[in-house]
Length: 97
Image (cartoon, rainbow, N blue to C red; front, top):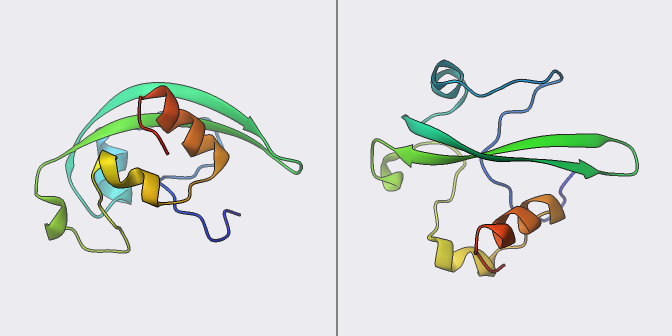
């Protein structure tokens, strides 16, 4: 869906779901704690997206994670193209992209 764009780590579901610590440990290759930030809706031509954004606090240094993830500082985010939904979220968090 997001051709040639970067994405934040995500868990996609077909039903409305609130992220729990158990779900995070099951679905993601890294451990840590989470804090809910906000919920956003985004309308595409063919589908409606309801996204919940969380802040993640890793137990380990990001370089120790496996998988297809690129960890960058908030200051480096402006170098990466994101979908509009994520771009708008980051701007509200004071992160210029």
